[in-house]
Length: 461
Image (cartoon, rainbow, N blue to C red):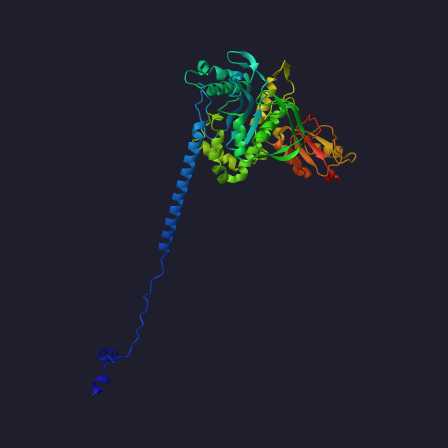
């Protein structure tokens, strides 16, 4: 009976087979999917990149908004009728005014204690500082011959008279000081910034302090206190960490040497602040903006449009490639403008020498442009060593004055002391002599040159 089925195809026989009760296991093969195409992969990558770009743009916008909101209260209008123009891509000059004001004693008035012109070169990515002594005599508007620091106090007191109704005392003081400094230096002052002593100290505290390499021992027996008294202050030589109050004392003390020495210390502290910010990197510096804004609130005012995007990008471009050690440091002082005269406590500078200092201040630093005068001191106790090295440096093209002995004769290592701020020359000397660099003069030396080289035993051949 089963014979008719024998010749049927196997699949047909399977259909006709009766259910026997046995379990039959059936295997189902998974469908084969084709691998994703190259076009699909690139589409996913583009979407991820687009999402990353959008997220980055949002973060940048948020950071800009926070920064602009933090600095907006610090910015005021320039009250000068015709402030100098600042074409894009060119360097700018900012007048930094350190203001001595005592809110608890309004009868004392206010005055500028510090005047520093800051030159920002966006193309060369460099910064230079030029200090002007507060006893410099100038021709002051409505007053005549007067000390240059009188300009701020007069502009502060006569703001409405000089610049019109609605101008605040601070705006008036800044405007007249910028006009006076610009005329004296024959230099356009594009923007102005002022900060009082409390704000200066708070900024340094917000940074967590700064590191200052004190070049020599400083003792001031008559440092002024806020209650019009005096106190003794001391600084030992060498690198040390300073908080805001200590750094302020270091920047203001002058009885140990002079107002010219104080100008050098003020610039040194500014460099230390820049160094501290740069060490934190762009992200760390950005995170500090709210704290710095709180520190400066009520103590800092500027006409610099810090919330403007092109200004932020320009300053950021300079900061990203700036080495604080290369910041140019210049000052009007007896060693840079020796043909000055004194009338009472006023200082009259030779106009030609002032122009020469300004020219160096604006020029790109280099060994040739700095024209530094160098003195070599023998700190190794080896007879003839300083004369030999002086001759070698002179043969290499440096301007060298006669050698002398250092106060110490047991120096192990050679040190190049950049006294007046000639960074290019100091770095070149340090490279040639395999030496370290320090700012200021060696302890126990009264400098008459720009750079002092103290030879150590490492130079003995």
